[in-house]
Length: 141
Image 1 (tube, rainbow, N blue to C red):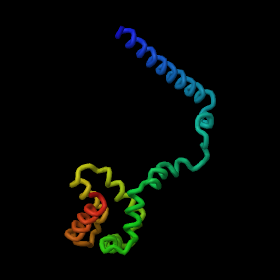
Image 2 (image 1 turned 180 degrees about the vertical axis):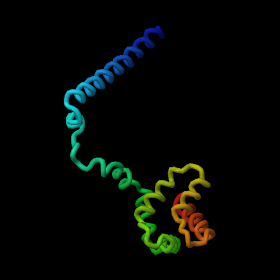
Image 3 (image 1 turned 30 degrees about the vertical axis):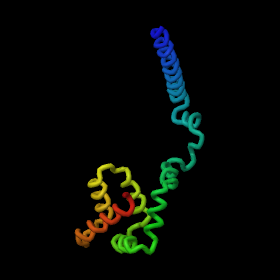
Image 4 (image 1 turned 120 degrees about the horizontal axis):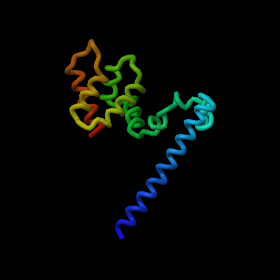
């Protein structure tokens, strides 16, 4: 009876495929009928700010980002050194970019990314390297 189970499985997949094709055909027909206004049929808040706020939920709900922001404004000696290094650069942008470094798997690549975030033309590379190592140690290990 294994053949009957496989056939039933394929039939279910074929039904899903047929449904997806029918939906795509309807969407294409609506596009041809209504032009760009067809979007109003499929998107609930077309005229809203959804494009400008795309991804904000991911950023705002990130616990690592919250911890990094709290750290950067703290009186921790490392945080003070980082703020001095960044000078007039946005702490929030730095925090977002630093939180993104968590996605980098290879530790050497992560260190390099942090170093690039801290880099400034008029600062000693050894100082930037030292700061990057300390940040890596404090935030990602």
